Each structure stands twice: as C-alpha cells, then as structure tokens.
Length: 45
Image (cartoon, rainbow, N blue to C red):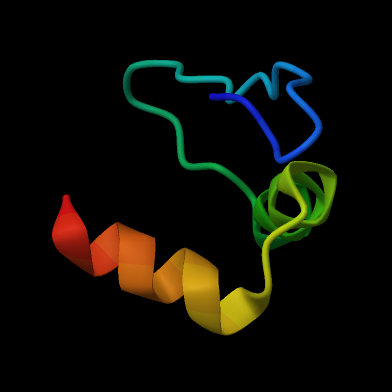
C-alpha cells in the first residue's frame, strides 16, 4: 500500500495471528488516513 506521499506502507500478515490494535493504529497513521477513512476502505474489501 502507498500513502499519499508515495511511500510504501507495510502491512504484516501472519497466518493464524491477529494484528494488535496498536499496530493497526500505527499503520493508519503512517498511511496518512483518518480513522473514518480507514473503516470506509475496510468495508469495501
């Protein structure tokens, strides 16, 4: 995923493991998204 500045944002995926809420918040912040925008995108998938 790329953020608005064209910087790649890495989202770790490990089978059988959940992503912790603190990591989700950090990814959202790094991507330059607002919380509401993240949830809109999440609903689209």
